[in-house]
Length: 134
Image (cartoon, rainbow, N blue to C red):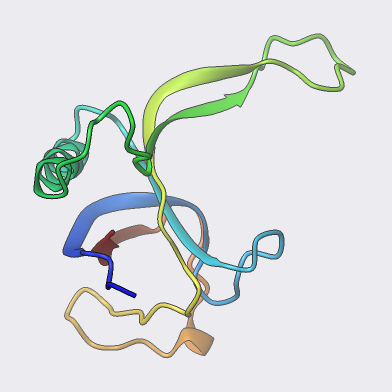
């Protein structure tokens, strides 16, 4: 079986939303580091540039490729109280989704490895996400 082509990338810095870096997400059993930011921020512009370059490298149609860059949505805050499934509305921000079957290695700002037992990164943690695009 041929190996899938990959590109090593580093995204960010971004604020993370509900990161699962120490323990895997209970529902999907994967580690996640989803970044949420304004689409016009320097980090998001760079992420879009990286994905556009990857699409060209892999010779993929942007309409058919499933990119991990999506519009952030939230439950409608104006929905009547007691609504079982309130409508989702766009917030204007983008979410860069990332996941891994293996636990990520964590580093501090100086590049020193961090013991995962010594920290508990939560929503709002500013981080760079390094991985690969396949």
